[in-house]
Image 1 (tube, helix red, strand yellow):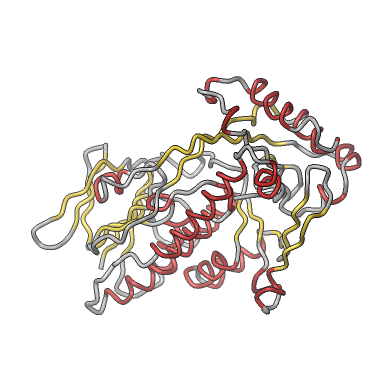
Image 2 (tube, one colour; image 1 turned 135 degrees about the vertical axis):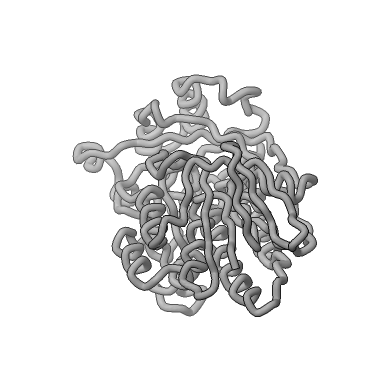
Length: 372
């Protein structure tokens, strides 16, 4: 069986690792960027229990060891604080689940390091760079052919669209399924720490945990074209919104590295229908793109890779049923992240405090302050 994976993101590479370890399966990954040095969007990842299980399942033991060595434990607790940094609540996933902390703890990892680990797990040149996918065609022999912008093509038994939120595979496979604009903007930026800045901030902001300051622009104040604003203008919008917050929080926004300040205009998939099974399917953002507000997008993509690895192994035995079973848990995650975004941008103070306080905004303030 030959599997074609379109997109060398985390989900696609995790799937490729899982399949490459199986006898009788050949996997090829096609990535539009010219080489792996391309800067990845975002600041880092928080890999939770689902993501760790997927990686342990799909990676060879040495690659999984490299993952553990390259990541920082982020614990199993979530602290919810108000704009004065007063503790509102503490969620402990280990206590809630009754499992050992090692089983449920999150791991913080830099995106570039993570991709490097996933690439090194593929021992042959199975990742093809500079391959911009244009379309696929179903062949009379039951196989599928992928076409690329350089006028080359590749033929396989299965095609997996792992090509992100603007997926061309999804565009052809499920043309009716479109992302929805939510009318919500979040402003992100990075505050670089040095020894002096660490001394001037509370320990809870510099202790290596996944600290993120959330400021979601209220819908009534959302700029018409946020992407046309300068970094200074974006920073000032955030500063005006948090002017009554405690001084350390204001400081990290005021003194953020302006080169990193940018708007994120939120979009989300609607509730996903069950679609007919075929030898073309999708994973990750290509099918269930969600807002970053719940911090679970990458973990759901890794879970997809875990599920599809097992389904494709079964398909070797004649059971080619890629009825996309991820749709149920993906819908839960899409709804959660969308709900948090909607509440955080509401005009009601209760909703904004309840959902802004978990600090899911991407304004990095700790040495290991990495967020999905």
